[in-house]
Length: 475
Image (cartoon, rainbow, N blue to C red; front, side, top):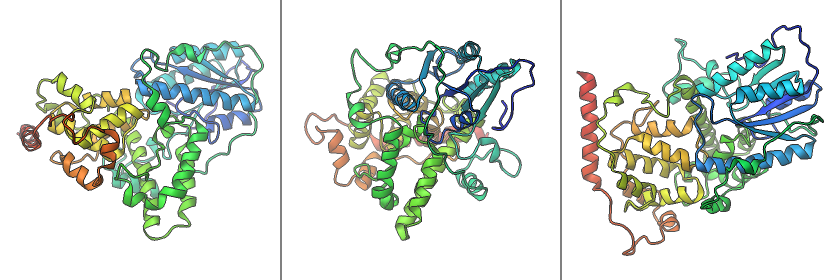
């Protein structure tokens, strides 16, 4: 894959005089969109395209909650583009032939996009770029989704980082992230006829049954909503983020993760706005802002790990964990965890919040994951798949990265012997049971289920299994 954002099309005798295609992907916004920004400088009409590609080799189909969010986000993007003078063309299928067909139909002079970092997506993009250039079409990709491109942050030996602290130190030691681009005043659309799918025909929203009522109540997808959330967070919650971010009942987090996942807001915009807000802070409030920027760094780290370990969702990053003796899967117990019926209030509160809203507080994500892996002895991949299907912010990097971190099999992972006790975590981070009672109304009554497992016994069993893995790999 060609990595430069300034590379030009291959020499060709073919001269294309048509519009510029801007291929939207995980960047469903108008402002700070480098590919759109570059397209506008070419002085040609714009064809805005989104391709729902779930059929190209190894591309992972979206989960249910993510599909719901995508529907709303595409509708919002289409409205924004329409207000600026352009249409959003929707197509479904393999991206390669679809982009080639649109380029041929419109006699496009260029096709521009912002980069993706999974191997399957990079493979698709590289083939499209090569084919377009062979046909004399300017094809370029840009950095729009990460502050630091994976190939620019390397160890002194030229490899990738496996520990966050030196990784983030290397990121912040270099040039700062660029300033975000402003939104264009107009986007001159191509006047030609171009067929587009009807968004409703894609069936992204659930219908029979319609389980998305809680998602609609909790979220408003779209670029405008993302910026409103950021503004509210910076003015109201940022000063106490450091002290309250681990308390799920407190409104102390940004709630930007799904907006970042879908690119409705860019990390450059979040970084720049936070740094501006930071200038007026001192003491613990300033420390909170620094902590929040570090959390943006963890998102970067997850994508850098994915770039170098493309099988992150299915393969242990640490091969020693391949020998872990997972017992046969108890489907009934797994269902109890998924439905929030484990008998452990913080776990159940998190799982029910997830099912209702498509999201879960980060502290509780760690607790629920630890419980599944280390108290129930269920392979982390089962949990990762469930989160993939139920999270509105499920992405190819952060979701498996987080699960492997908890399991102890991933990059800079929690030690295998770190097992979150859900009762102690509840006492520490939800001492007044506000979060638990908001999500588990029958807690404390006879209707609440008995504990699914014994925490002490299962902790000892997990540690014995991990010790067996250590002994096997050491021999």
